[in-house]
Length: 184
Image 1 (cartoon, rainbow, N blue to C red):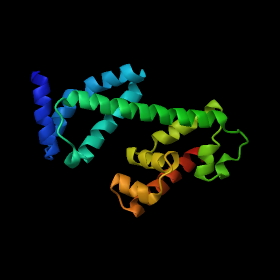
Image 2 (cartoon, rainbow, N blue to C red):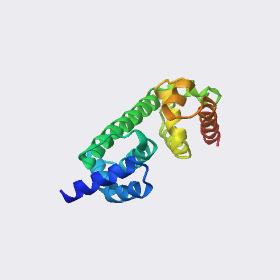
Image 3 (tube, rainbow, N blue to C red):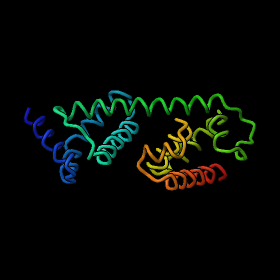
């Protein structure tokens, strides 16, 4: 009960823009949330990634957060939904890798064609994972919105509170990194 009240007070301070409250809440709940995520998806790396994304989103949207009585329960629900989206995205990539042909012309393809026709062999799977790890969180987010969710640059800019030019440049830079990784 004491923790619930403390979390609630930190949440309210966080909503007001208090960075110290954000970091205190992070310190209090990060590991319990990661452990919860591991129980949900059975993968520590995915759970850590999703928990990081939850806290990043909370800070980015702190001005629009609503009042919450049970902060830990709220964050668990948020984390579970985030994990389900990540797992679905990984399943889509895995399916694309499995279903794509291995005819060797993938380096000449546009990125859109590449996503549809990714090779199924393990080496390419590993290269894709390695290449995606080279991207920043924001680049991964925008690539996902553009190529997996099919958002236009205008929709991406609106969704991420960026200008259209920034969204375009971020995706362009990410694609350069991906192409470079696949050529090496």
